[in-house]
Image (cartoon, rainbow, N blue to C red; front, side, top):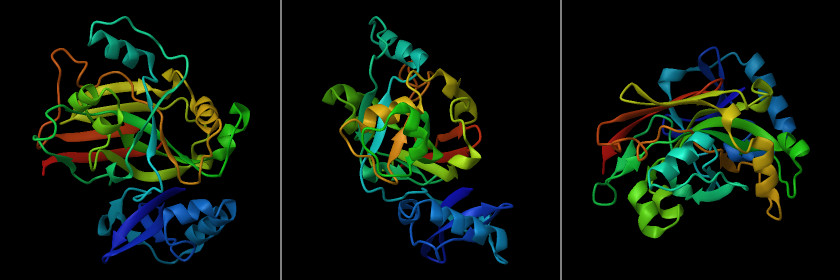
Length: 288
């Protein structure tokens, strides 16, 4: 299923796509987080409702929000998880490429989460180096700790598209990722969650970003250094993962700061991020 959080008549609801329309699922759970927490039985109920519902809402009559608009904790992210991105990262500062032996983990604040078609806030007084990063997002479905790689996929609820919008000079100034990754609205997410039964293999998906229609990134999840089971294995060592946790799996090469000359987002630019088998999010950069 493709599960959505949407606003209709000033009310936030959850639903599922059926033939280009939305079937309401708020009779099962009030929020996506609650639906995920309820486990497999809730998904069985949801499928039954989708199959039998007599009514649905046209997709263009609602406003899609991030599937999990208010996560309970920070979005967990991987840095330098594609070899070519690691190469461009080090080359931009004249350093020798070092591929990571372990996942490089950072987080984005909960207030970064943004809708799949909402504006990306841009304040030139805060950053002049706003950058794009298309990523596959993994949504955790069960509580787990010390999860082995061969069990890890059992803990995946589904997948979404994520844009890890980054303020590059803030990363340099603060000498870490968190602040430069955590500006308000800097994590467009969606347009929905594709449940794992509809996308059983996340490791052969094309990932693409476009700015004003021009392709900037074009790669495949098969090129990730650490695949989804490895990521879950490492994250869960000594740390409990919770239902609804959002894990961004890293971005491929083609980001703005590593281009020659560097390119950064400007007010009015439109960024599209697409992951094969899931969909596309599209966000305009807007002055705040």
